[in-house]
Image (cartoon, rainbow, N blue to C red; front, side, top):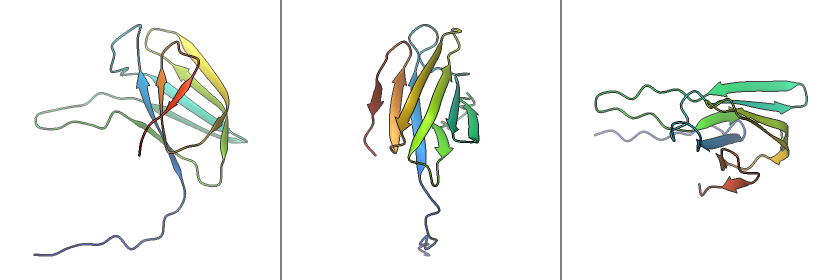
Length: 108
């Protein structure tokens, strides 16, 4: 038996976003999220792809090393609805519900 231990140093923070759709499929597959902070712009899309005895994590993850806030967090929902949030504190995990004006903190 072998026990492996990760001894690498953390490189920075990450922001994980759970998206919950109300106007189209609840899983929000194909939702596109853009995180703009300063000159750095990152785009992620929630993809499907579950298979036999397999389930993908339904979170969108951004590396946010050296950043404290996102200037703009833009969400393009499958229904065509677009939401923008400004000066978003980059906490570890948040949930965004389609059409709601608030961001919800999730436990780690």
